[in-house]
Image 1 (cartoon, rainbow over the protein chains, first blue to last red):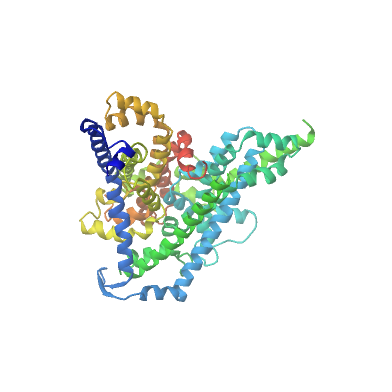
Image 2: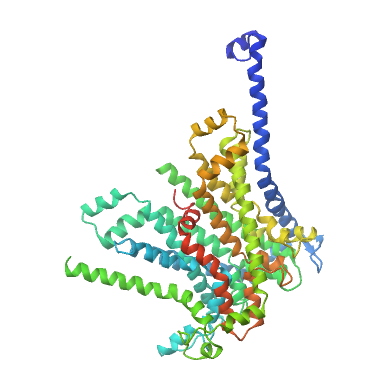
Length: 317
Length: 274
């Protein structure tokens, strides 16, 4: 015992020497208390509105409920078993199709715009701001504007088709076009964000890289394809993942433009959750919660992918 | 410059301007349509330029729905959420950077993991909780779940870590308390990040749709975004009114995007660019 005190040399020795450690300890305790005090507001919100609800979603998903949504009986995994039916299969297919229709054109469109902007033109800032402008529009306002465009009898889109001598399209009222129309609106809303993310990525490419490429005679398209695009890899990946997560969560444009129709052709996962839980007055929280857990799983997979790749990138560089 | 290069440049501008048309046309049309008369909006093929600045649509949209009230609701909701998130995030970020406590890393991991949870997967229990508390159709119900969000903590933590430790030590030697240090030294020096977080939070909460839709029942409590949809349902035959409503609703965020783009870019691309 006596050897150990002399060994570490701090706690051993004469009584007066005991004091500094004790005040240090008190200071430590004060700091810990303060830290938890500072974290408390956030932690309370997370506990009440994020962690507890997750548990309650699991609970609800395993219970049947009465007409006003009170859980009445334990049904185990019945609601999840119902997810393997054709009805829910259609919802999933619609969700994935919508995601593809939004993410692929959105990311490629933003990339095209950014590459054009980077090829040494004047007024880059003007163009970038102009392309970012749709970002100011909320989902609701964008949807309302596009609802006007999609009007079959007086909308601008059919007006253009008419001028070109082409046939008219029932943008929102036909099963072939409804999902495309909602996607088109979403791509328009998202483009600005994509341009901002990729432009910021281009800005972070070291100047020497481009100068070296120019010395080697790589200009225009070749420089873009062999230098800029590969170096933008992380940003492109980030954008693809974030756009996917956002597309999976889309709701407002569907609620305003199509209400999930016609005949369920635009009923995505989140819209289906809304319908079961809130739309029909049935308050089927059990079924809706099971679907909410599917959404959670999909988003978690995307985020894990993002974190996994970013982690690898960090190790690489 | 050779002729080929000049031709290439011209082609480049042409492609860019062509690409800008579909991007900017809706922005133009929402304002153009606002000033059109019903007759002009109903012609086919559609008329693209208003014949004059007719203000009837704006007048009628203000009569049709309590738009000013909804404006106020949206402003108040987004304002409260923004201020609250700035406060909760700054406090938490301070604890993570400047205070030593056990489980710091674990708690931070917990914070980050909350970012992965889509709000739609907790929306039903949150709706039930707040209804149980009697907060359905109230401001408290609209804002409570959003008073803290880990994204702000994450960004502010990054920014606080850049802070020179000598300055912190000097403040401590001067006997400056934690809160005074945060308020008089740290926050003023973190203004760019605070603005980025603030602008980002304001725009996202101003644009919220699902939550206000289910949380509000009366038009007096509805936010602007929900009001736009009510307008569309109530005035189903009058696109001029919808466009006027959309134009009015977009003005604040349009101003933010035009004048605060620097901060928006910082806030939005924080995850993408290190």
